[in-house]
Length: 293
Image (cartoon, rainbow, N blue to C red):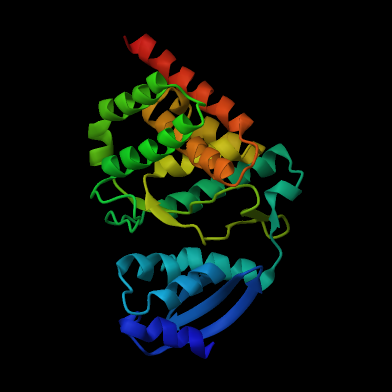
């Protein structure tokens, strides 16, 4: 505990030294803390890899690491909900539950409220990636789509024509990406991180270790791609009825697939299903362009 305090106070990580940290719970390689400061409750989530990052960067802690490695979301309602979950320990991941139609509707509505609350916190663009040197969301998307597409090209899983087609779609939507607002994103919303306490009728979104700044469409693209439980389908049907017909959404969707594809290839895992997904998304975008044309 003392070591954590020393790390956080290095280089004025906290300008206010009048605070108290109480360890709440440790699970896997992450540690959850309750931070009391200025009569407010904050949540401090530190993963083993993030503690290591802080130790390695003691002399150069910048705004990115202040926001994302240590303090995740300084938002009372989110943090109180998290603390309620960890203190009571009664929530069960949706992946392990069999729910009624009414429960699925209720969970979908509550989850959407949680995500709206989280996404309402707007932030300036910031990125420490060694690959990216730009200053806006368009440059960021273009940079990483280039990286992913080039990796896919190396394995000959998409053609050069398809690669150029992706970049042309990005260029076509450039004004959107230049104007989009950037928000806090959870980064890993899935059926294992959505928990439900049936007795107390409480819905929790947990595990903020992968949170990031981005467009909320990216969050929902990932959510709809990897989560197929009824509650998520309800969110999609109720709030995003026409989103699959949106080129911009499909670009985010494609980015998610390519990211996972590259991860699997680098780690020598089977990426066959993701190759098929890449082609399906490309065909969907081509269909939209044919209609527009």
